[in-house]
Amino acid sequence: MKTTQTLLFLVSFILMSCSSKLPPLKKVPSVDINRFMGKWYVIANIPTFIEKGAHNAVETYTWNEKENRIDVYFTFNKNSFEGEKKEYTQKAFVFDKSGNEWRIQFFWPLKFPYLILDLDQNYTYTVIGVPNRDYVWIMAKTPTLSDSVYEGIIQKLKAQHFDVKLIQKVPQRW
Image 1 (spheres, rainbow, N blue to C red):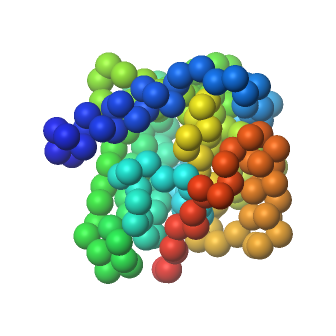
Image 2: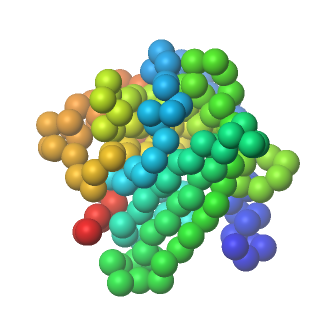
């Protein structure tokens, strides 16, 4: 990542941790980290500047036993299905025993909150948000979600005071 992009990314995520007058986000009660691992297709999001124009966005989580963390690998094609392939690696640290809150590290030493807001019982879809509600990711184990499931997620996000007008579907074609 270029220095300017890195700086903008850093400032963006520092700001997401700022306090809000809204109530704290409601997270799922618990997460089985081993079941959560694997490939997740990004169905929709309020994108960071890096993710704008992403196609075929996929986030892959792998438990790193040696380091006691989650290795995160994020890929997408820029601006089209045939666009330049972008790849980013990150580290995630489970923040509490329930597994519903992580700290994501894009680069040392900074870690940012990553809250698991929704997760179906079969681990087929999940919703990740940040405390100030500036970013959210709707992800699934398959490249698509049914319209009814997607609309249900949007309604839950609206109830948690996300600006759902900012949520954009991520084109997926496999």
